[in-house]
Length: 228
Ligand SMILES: Nc1ncnc2c1ncn2[C@@H]1O[C@H](COP(=O)(O)OP(=O)(O)OP(=O)(O)O)[C@@H](O)[C@H]1O
Ligand SMILES: [Mg+2]
Image (cartoon, rainbow, N blue to C red; front, side, top):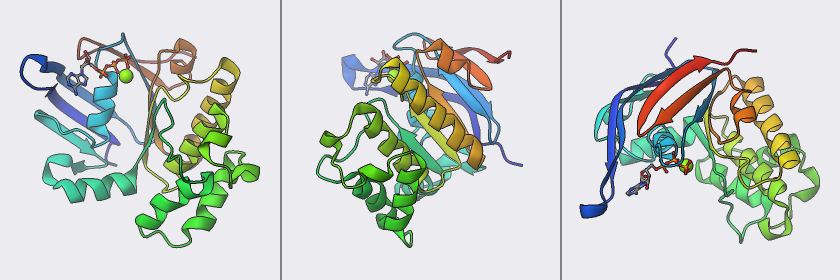
């Protein structure tokens, strides 16, 4: 079966002129379907940038990026956007909810735009699955941080993505709330056989992944299975 993620010799620089930075330097990385990977490393080492590349949000300057056997270089912008919508879910540290939409609309509207039938009932079920049945008509400003991150998680999971990428999803939450979000993240991805790529500064969270990958200065330093 195709791997979930295959990166080969990926290089990427971002920024213009004097502020241009060579961020990713020959990154090669394979992730199996259903695997959970914790991506760790110092601030500025390129973790978020690597997530952007494998989420199809930034294109590599060189090297190959393949998800579920699809070579991103063979897709135009529309094709890449469609592929993202169908196969990749994203959760950020700062939730990224739309403030003028209720919890339900935040989850349902992207599904509707993607032409998914029954978007609202599906969204309701996804919110119930993360324990927010009683909060569907709340706006983000009327929800706690942990609840907002649950909405973001429901939104990311609703299209049933094959790969979920999460960039410090518990970074803005207190320890107990962060643990609840992490529990949901691992439970839901495992339940659906989805691949999880998780960036975190929290060693105990990284330890919950099947494998940790350590980055340093734009390179993969080590990639090792987590011992139980
Ligand atoms: N659009 C951009 N233009 C120029 N430089 C950038 C851009 N995006 C990121 N960088 C630089 O690339 C480096 C890697 O950034 P990145 O956000 O991937 O790091 P990170 O490992 O996620 O760090 P953190 O743990 O602090 O989130 C940083 O030095 C950053 O300043
Ligand atoms: Mg980052």
